[in-house]
Length: 284
Image (cartoon, one colour):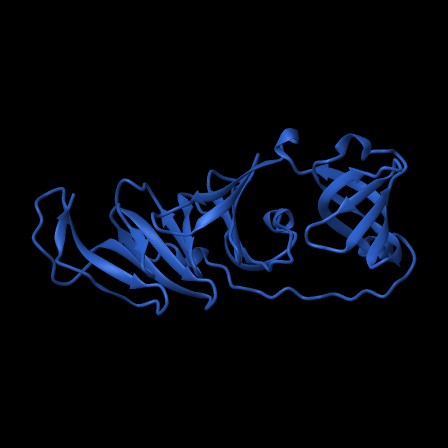
């Protein structure tokens, strides 16, 4: 089972910024479109405004020919369109937005539910803000987001990790529309997200109640720090991962039939170095 993870790791890549000169025609128009995640509200004058937590001091004035926004007031939405005009008044920037489409982002419309401060993965890993969509789950952390979904062409999982900033919209990051891609397992089979601790991502492979694979990746350093076959019971505490690793070769205790020789180990998450942490034993 060891080293099975390596073939699934994707290289990090940087997002390029494309600058397109203004022009005419459908292709040029498409490049001018913007996507805003926010809340549609009705003004006292009967108009509709769109505000986004990621753009303080900015108010969008959206309009559309089909009045598609009237039934989507006071809920989270994704609005896509073209900014036609920008006006600054009394320190507030107003952007006139020609709307192409509006997509609800709330549980009321079956898009997502959100749980904050939820444990996700191995005991002791960081608490996450979990966005549960109908077709995927997004584990949102202060600097990273992990999106786990079922593969469309097999029974496996697709696992994607990206880095984001405080200015990025959680909805946009969870839809992989914002953020910087760092890591991907395109078709993981039994691979599953097992938590995040600081910069370290954990992924398991196989049944959690038996011998299974455990991988650790330092996202900041873009380096895999662990690829081991372990027994149940791995946990994180005080900046290190404690786990019991199957002894693959070398000196090991003589175990009865049906039992596996294991060694208690500890991985320092900061240095990425693992060391024995006790006496060898037989499991179960």
